[in-house]
Length: 259
Image (cartoon, rainbow, N blue to C red; front, side, top):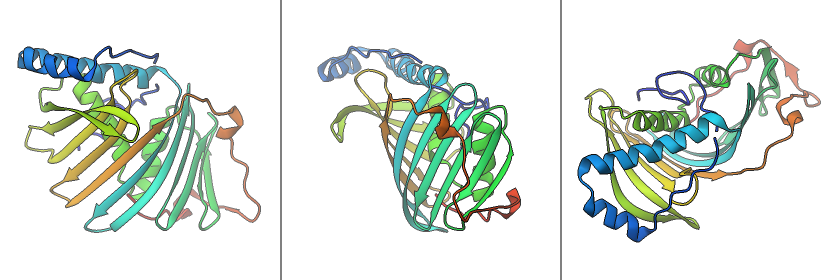
């Protein structure tokens, strides 16, 4: 994968901008695909991903994602993560799943990583950008940050990366939402990941679902997304040690591998 940052190639966190309206019905999409030359279709797709990227860069975000994964080394796993990010550097991420439960918070001054299973937590000065905190956590936990990788893919498509091809098979239902399906492939011979993305057809083209298959790792993962426009309270980014918990050095948090 080219990048595991929230914004491909720049290692800056895409915070989330105002709503854009996609004024296309299913019929409009089908007609447009048949009528437009390939270059125009590509431009239309790039613009949609650019709308998503702009939204992520300019707004506070709050979403949850559930995942189902298969990995040759780690086996099967399921879990859920909640993301809360606000400017300039407030962060709260809750991870839970097969055999793990972690909390990471940053109130702009202190970064905390808490392992609920062992009741151990570690703290350090908060990094300037939330993505730096996420990269630290994923490195410690050997965490395959598929959500972060996917948002990196969004950046590649939005920038018009010539090493990426995108096809748009059509509109599909994901839960109670109509979502446009995109097949995304890297053509540079280095990246063997194959992505499928479903973006909301109405309003901001937020992800409804993503799927990745890595032929070189023999792994695959499906994520479903639930976005919220309700902002969390400021105190949600602060950490109060639970009764009976123990503070340890960052190297002793004993994070375990997960998807």
